[in-house]
Every structure is written in structure tokens, then in C-alpha cells.
Image (cartoon, rainbow, N blue to C red):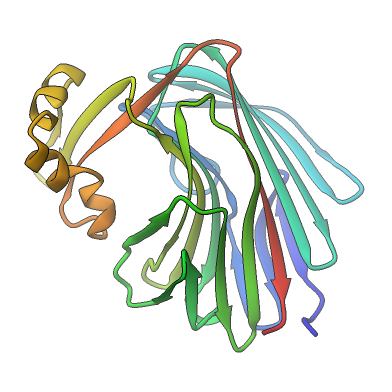
Length: 260
């Protein structure tokens, strides 16, 4: 049987979590447009985040945030419930102005030593410090090891028929990262090619990106290239979605801690 789960909360989010030899933390939400990046756990840029409320509940916390992005404005409601060996997190994002999205993410992070491998879409993932996104349109993924396993299940989502619901496991150096993710589904509202290195940052307009991606060989080569190769090079093409005021995105994920 798993040892009792210990959670340290910070501003209504899980800052650290431990169950026996399973350790992790910095769980939160992320999203971005072409000019700004929102996160509750790392370093945001190009946006202004305002905390509206954060309140304890019988089983966890609820928190409301407003974000002014470079290409949009929205409100995010997060509800986290921890009951025995199960944690349920629900995120609702409501647009207040027309808003551009690269994606919409619920983020989970664990120490590398907590697990031997991950399983997603029938594939076993060994941690090799590659930082590669092993991403699939599935509703469940698992991290496994001698200390037990953690099962991630997407139980609900709202996509506005503009996004595809995905899960991924990433073997970031020193950590396991799991994202429940909504990514723009084709045909996308906008297309974007970007390239970043130490010397410069290139960002092509929707028009130029469409012209280049009209060549099938270019699209096949560039589509989410950086994610598929662990960020080397920081070059990729991707789609973007535009939502209007009042439109809502939702992710609800159950995280179950279990014995192997």
C-alpha cells in the first residue's frame, strides 16, 4: 500500500507532493500566444497576471486568475481536490477579449528518480534526458517504478472544436514532465513558423508561414520539429487558434497514485 500522500500548497496550487519514494511538485497551468508566455510555476513573460481570489475548500483549493496577454485577455479558474490517493484538477479558461493560443496546458512534474519508465499509447518511455515530447491523442498516461505508479486520466475537456486533446510524457533532464494539452486542430486559424537561437529570433507572419507550409515536404519537416527533437534546434512550424470573448476552454484530469 502507498504511504500517506503529503502535499505542500502555495497560492492554491501544489508546490510539492510526496508519497513514499514518489516526489514532485510545481504543478500548474501554461499557455502562450506568439508574443507572450503564461505560467504559474516557471518564468512568465510578456503578460500581466492578476490574482483575483484563492480560497481553501474541504478537499483542496480554488483559485481565480486574470491574464492580460500580448494577444488576448482571459480569466482562469483552477479547482484542485485531493482525496486519499486521488487528485482531481479542473481548469476553466474564459476569454474576455479575442485571444490567440499556441496551446492550453495542465502541467505535472516529478523527480526523475521517482519512476523507472512511462507508458503512453502502448509505448514504454525510458528516461534518457532527451527532453523529447512523446505526445499522443489519448486520455491516459502512466509513470511507473518500484515506488508505485501515477496514472493521469483526462476525464473531461472543452475544445470549441478548435483544439485536439493530447497527453505527453517528456524526459526532461532530472525530471519527468506530463502535460494534458489542448493544441490547435487543423485547419488552424493561423499558422506560425519560428526560429530562436543565441543570435536572433525569427517569427514569420501567418501569410508567409502558409506559403512555406503549402509545400508538403516543408510542413512534414517543420511541423512541431523542436518538440519532436527535444528543442534542438528551436525551429518549428505550428498552428494557432483564435477564441472570441465568452468562449471557454476546459481540462479536467484525475491523478491516481497506486501500488505496482
